[in-house]
Length: 297
Ligand code: SAM
Image (cartoon, rainbow, N blue to C red; front, side, top):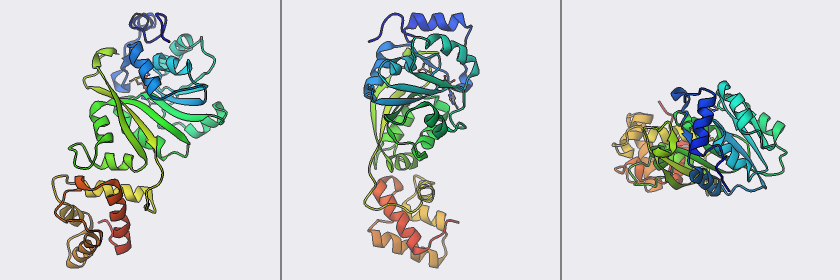
């Protein structure tokens, strides 16, 4: 349920910003959501329930935090902007299930904060209207963390959403698609108009859900090493895999023979572009490259 007094209501948001003399900081990606329906739709997409503890990145003035808190067991929110702390103290005062930590989420010890503030008895979710300038680092941080996150539902720039959800052959499919889909099932839940933000961002937005999936039938030995192979293979999107691999490993006859072996063994046509390969293809390619002893230059 949302009502006239909710933070995300346009009139109340304006009143809060005025009262505290706040102007949104562009450098911190501050675009506040002022559409109660969109806020509720985000919480719906995340299927937040009293069985969930929710981590939020960037509560802003608390509009999404409030909607999450109405349904979740507890919300742990990380906000970098010190000037928003007393605002949040006031706007979120009706709720006793919210902890706001005044820290840069990329520098915070999130595991420690989770241990300190959550009881470890619930499912853990990440729900956020992300600061767009650090969307990818935030997602990578949470994907690489040891926190047992059950589901992430996050707002981001539409263009990034399309890359995260692209399938082989799509024009947006690239290393980010592979690296994220290696661990997560991804889906665009819905688009969000720039009109519902104060101030309006210059880009379109979308809500994406990311759900961890089970391991692939084969796995790389080292995730980071695998990601380097993927990035390397996409270095020149318009070149075929044969040329990209020569760029990565070298061109002398011995190396070329090894590359040929790898591709032949996997039945990969050297002429195809990297965007044709699935996540599983990349894992097999990486493992076979390691087996062949090819070293990145
Ligand atoms: N959740 C609010 C909403 O939906 O209206 C605000 C979302 S706004 C797009 C992004 C928020 O992230 C801002 O409040 C900003 O100050 C905060 N932020 C930016 N960089 C951050 C960082 N490194 N760590 C934590 N919060 C950050």
